[in-house]
Length: 206
Image (cartoon, rainbow, N blue to C red):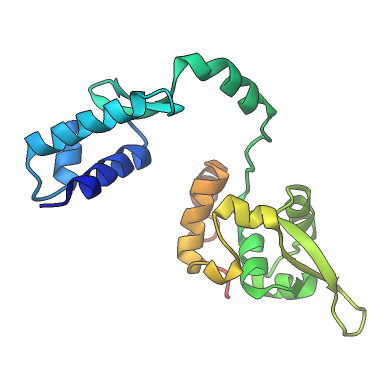
């Protein structure tokens, strides 16, 4: 049996990560070994905790489940804040591949990126720079002195990383990208797959 504070923390985490309202039954199932009545009691305590005025969010019952939401009395301020936010970043499969090469090989030049991908990447890099995910990092000391590229602070923010030493495996990086950068990647992969293009599971060499 879990300690009370751990049980409440886990219930809170489950509701937070669930994309849809999560039912009591689903919470109990996730907390194997915990009695339903005890889980229900801690869930009710958690709901009451978030109803206090010093919390800006609450746990509401929605469609037979529980879900976090902001409080109605704060909607005007929150609506104004949301309108001030930058639009979400969307990346194509090609842009994600290029970003992965830069992330895992940085600082890296355009010819080096193109050697890995096998296609021209100049336009894609321009897009990544416009979205502030990539910045220049000086020039490489070789013939022609090509520009070096590296990931930016915005890149770390989008992917929730402290620094590049926390970069996951390439396969995990793709999953993070789907979560952080939206569904356009998935749509691009479906389009590539249906048109008989390259395998969407293919990963750039690190």
